[in-house]
Length: 347
Ligand SMILES: NC(=O)c1ccc[n+]([C@@H]2O[C@H](COP(=O)([O-])OP(=O)(O)OC[C@H]3O[C@@H](n4cnc5c(N)ncnc54)[C@H](OP(=O)(O)O)[C@@H]3O)[C@@H](O)[C@H]2O)c1
Image (cartoon, rainbow, N blue to C red; front, side):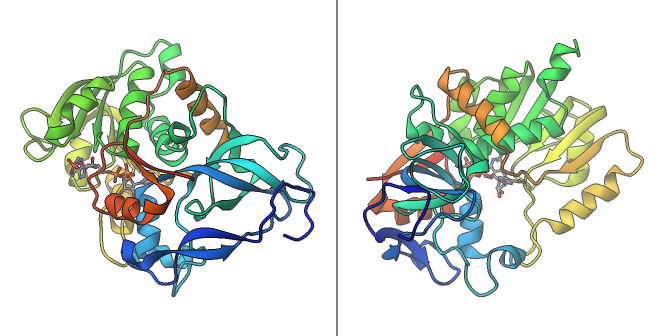
């Protein structure tokens, strides 16, 4: 390690799961890599747990191709996947005063880096890990929890609306059993909404336990089915991205909003067509379709951490993998049928 403001790192090398080409989980291998130096405004973390997201899989595959503009044209610039990280600060870069060696933190790493022993993070993306919260639970929060939070805000399902005495809102969460969905159901219920949820049959019990008043199997019930008639909801959070936009728009009442978290689409441009279609359908309409591009927001993460530490939200962890099994963890998330979250525990 070169000179940094303070450091407790005694080694120059570390194990890291790296990829040198875009591909499936077999493009990622456990290698020895150099320990990076924190730059200005950064800290180096000794990782304790890393949460995986479907976003890690999009970057791993470089699909849709549009992803490669941001992450590297031929191969990922950051070869290590894993964006949701919990760790101990072991070195601080120049100018860092908000954190010190020994601090325990959680946050979203830009572009990845979490499936390694050490990772860099800008200080601004990190919040303290309270003693009441385990690293593995905290590692589920940043992207999935943050996206659910921002989607509900966009759809108008807010604490402020509730405090202002707005009538109880009815919200439909489509794709309620995955990482984002299990948080969306819990947060919407916490914000006073009556939550209806579409998920796989095998997960209906889990989703009901998270606070959904009614659940439906997405393989037999679709927007527009008798169980989900038009003009029924104040807000729809679409995390599955497969229902026709017109059917989604018809679900909400006048004044209602649809937050589009996901949009399946072509191999090159992914959800771009759906985003453009949503804009067109929302012109002069009393029912608005809004795509969401969630971003790392420390203020929101701090609130999620507080809610999880007090048990007000209970992240669902389907599987925990040891660090040496991180390749299998990526393969499992890539299968697209995770219930809640998958977390890799550092050694
Ligand atoms: N816009 C943003 O800023 C943003 C941020 C984060 C994530 N995302 C996107 O949000 C989506 C979800 O992410 P995630 O991490 O929550 O995914 P995930 O955890 O991998 O979601 C898997 C879950 O989705 C369920 N599912 C699959 N197809 C479904 C359908 N047609 N209807 C209802 N449920 C379905 C699966 O149930 P079964 O096993 O029963 O099939 C599984 O439980 C991804 O497309 C991701 O790229 C967007």
